[in-house]
Length: 118
Image 1 (cartoon, helix red, strand yellow):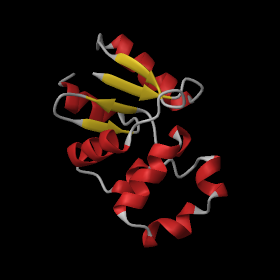
Image 2 (cartoon, rainbow, N blue to C red):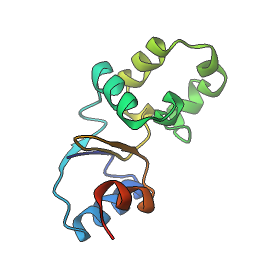
Image 3 (cartoon, rainbow, N blue to C red):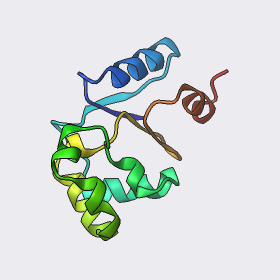
Image 4 (tube, rainbow, N blue to C red):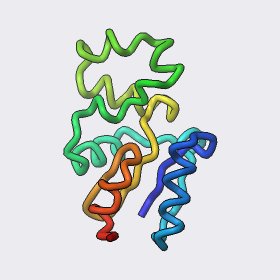
């Protein structure tokens, strides 16, 4: 499993602690140093079943600076993938990538269900 995170993010810290406390083995990937590629984003988007907008860090400074709230609705999926791949700080985190699932953001109930934890 790959745990894609930004170490300074408190939600990522909480999710990592939760994974460790539940004995989940994972490979940690720093989203700013190792940004997801367009291909990875496409795969993760398809596996997640979520709208592409859910992959954007809508509370991030860069998202607000670029005024993406107004621009996203008129952008093509390809343009959105390219934008997400251009800077890890635009991507919502944490992301947990398993063999057959992708979780975006940390919701404990969803993570428990996906990982089969009681």
